[in-house]
Length: 234
Ligand SMILES: NC(=O)c1ccc[n+]([C@@H]2O[C@H](COP(=O)([O-])OP(=O)(O)OC[C@H]3O[C@@H](n4cnc5c(N)ncnc54)[C@H](OP(=O)(O)O)[C@@H]3O)[C@@H](O)[C@H]2O)c1
Image (cartoon, rainbow, N blue to C red):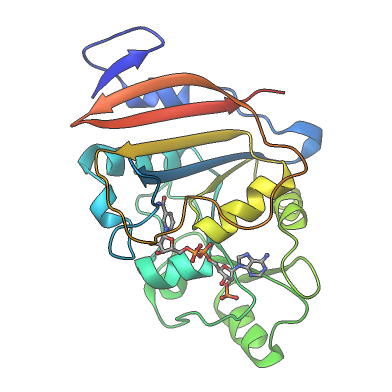
């Protein structure tokens, strides 16, 4: 992987580029970062999944960003489609799944093989039987009535000790994170593919009161993919 910005360099130490930053969320809430991948024509999926957009370098960055997070926040549809298990490694952070339906595979590795217990973030209107099933398999956070109030969920994870959250999508959940205005860092891989189709953008759904402005802090390249890291410009 080579660095194009801030200073061109033939070889980079990913951990130094991404890990050197001081991540402190504002107003006592955790720092909220997102890591996503998109095609050149703006799609978050190819054939309904992310694998075709990713690359070995992208997966290396994916793992590194996880290692820097206290909690990985992800939408239930991504867990179902991508077959999420626990984060790898001894310091793999817990996964926090946002779900109202609680239609999750409670016997799968995400709930049976996680070193750090998986968190399920749901709302008061969730089915009580499935809520009990969730309580048996995971740590449950209730944030919101009819739907999860994502800003409340972020604050609640902070109260439980998380200082850095990493949202891995999918587009519906990231859209809600964007709408809270609480997104501090956006890491996006641009894959060198035009995929067409009707896949979503990396964030869809409600819009924030004002578009969130970011500044580019680093740009890396590997195999014609770009790895862009943006920090919020307040
Ligand atoms: N390009 C990328 O970087 C990237 C990253 C991740 C995923 N993806 C792709 O994106 C697709 C999945 O994304 P998606 O946008 O359809 O779904 P998603 O954001 O992963 O998950 C949506 C689900 O999360 C739960 N949810 C989200 N917000 C909620 C709220 N406020 N209250 C209650 N529940 C809430 C609901 O789960 P329930 O249905 O359980 O209630 C909802 O159906 C997959 O194709 C995946 O491959 C791409």
